[in-house]
Length: 53
Image (cartoon, rainbow, N blue to C red; front, top):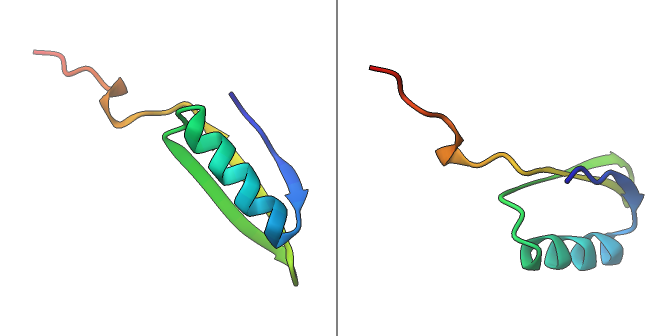
């Protein structure tokens, strides 16, 4: 799942809590301007790479 939105600090907290409950492994929060943030996420996990022998 990919989710990107410009949010206030309070909305960032709510979005991160929800994404954690949904099982997201990687959540990135970036500040775009003062008190405005972008939250983005992907389903990438550390175990997704398979080694070939």
